[in-house]
Image (cartoon, rainbow, N blue to C red):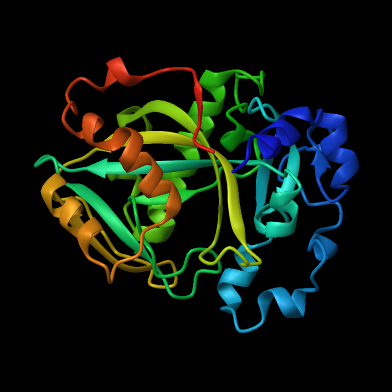
Length: 286
């Protein structure tokens, strides 16, 4: 991504974002579970028939979930549908949202990978880390339910990402909440990246600030994969993952490759001492 694009994203104030994308519901108007102001029309320059032609009905339905739209500094601006946030036209114009990536390691130090289902609208059939998804723009996943009120506080945002991660590990892999207690997640850092889904001319893509979460679990956790979300899964050690990267027949998500190239293996070698890798930075892998 060019520095001109980074400058474009950084130039937007919250008001600029709301003016450019009127489908985004401003944060101050959100109460309980928000609804996108114009969810049925949040489709950029494409109509729904063209965008969703041939796609799975359940995955189309999930495109109406509400992501947290952000400014360049990871400050929430409002709620935008998953569809709005993942249309490449909107991404190329600078629309940014929040995500999380979970790396689940068992007692043997093996990492649980998943292969995304063929039905996925974005990045189908690609291998990736354990779970990658988005906090919803609701109080619990913004991290501001109960006593926490500051939506811009990083600790609150981290808590919201952990709540979302617990939900999605259950939804995608059938791992029950009892195997993923919130206090077992370790937050490390944030990365900012942009990528088209597959070919550069794809209608879909990602532009996210991604919260990196490490989860260390027992060997015998329950996995009951949702095959509308997950095509396959496997535990690997570091050597096995390196061998997978060398296999020309396997395709990996761009964020997973970025994280592996920049961070993963040093984390993997220090699972008992992860705190030294925690920071408050946003690493711009653009």
